[in-house]
Length: 452
Image 1 (cartoon, rainbow, N blue to C red):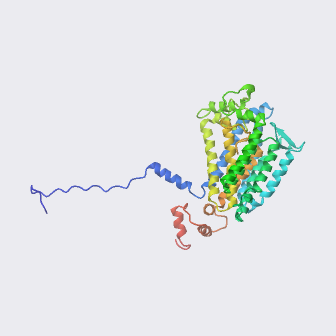
Image 2: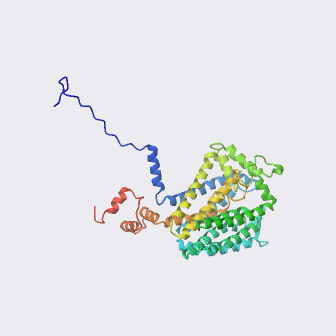
Image 3: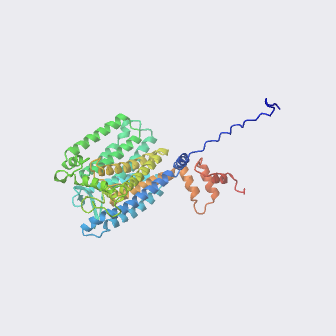
């Protein structure tokens, strides 16, 4: 052994400790878990189901809170509007369940009957003695007693289903490469529905129908020239309709208003801002709104979002916005991951409908858009708007269930009564790879039926 100059054996220097593998940061681990959960096949299914139910339940609570004073002022019981909305929600829940269980072929078969029924009812609206005028718009039909129906709300559902079926059949025949097949008869039929709606003076619903039309054309891959051309025609018609109506011009002038103005023309818009401003961070408390005591018109319908901001504060309004954002994302995900053209067009049309209507309603309450008189989907009071919207949500749920990976996941979690688990696993295995499975399920699926 070599020695040092002093005769002592050399002292060996301790080696550097082995470099440890860097630990994942807790925030990164949380991000990876959230991303893994976000990519699961059932994410869209649960977002649509849970988000729509939460919006509907919260809407029932806010309808009850916002409509009490209005009901008492009309010499009605305080829960009058809430009971009607709750009944509509029960019927809408049945429609949602039925639509979510229908096969895609049945949805396509219902497209033409729903369109014919919607057109027939919108024609009846213009018949004297049958159609009713509410707030200057003749878009209602009396069903007897205090129940009324607005056929134009069902026109949105009719355009989505019929337009999706039409475009899907043309895509299967490879006809969408020709502009005439892309426009005819979709655009003329949509303009017919718009004309029937505008005869009653309801421009807000017409704007939503126009948004659905452009959503379908965009999903069908309309070229930019064609898209811009149809948009220019729609804008020109809208400009003429607004310019020739003093009521619509006054609504346009109330964008960003901070004072009621002469003759209180901007009273509703300004008091909507007052309600939101007085809510603060967490609101004044459920039922403690001041603006609903006769200051804010349509507090339980078009401006229910303002009452939500006053009573639940910024936290409540952001929660509503988050629920609508999740619902919109889930609809886009369903439309983007399917191979069925009808499912893609119908899911995209429903998502465009709900998202555009929510943006227009909330934008009007915030003073960023003119007051269009459209309700907040699933949230505002109104059975005519709630029923077709819940049926449309049922469509999205049915489309989310049709995804092969989602169908396999549902089969593994909820095996049908009387079926063996082995058969369920075989059907799930045939559906393709399952990244959503846990390690325990993958191990059990790899064993044979006789292995312990």
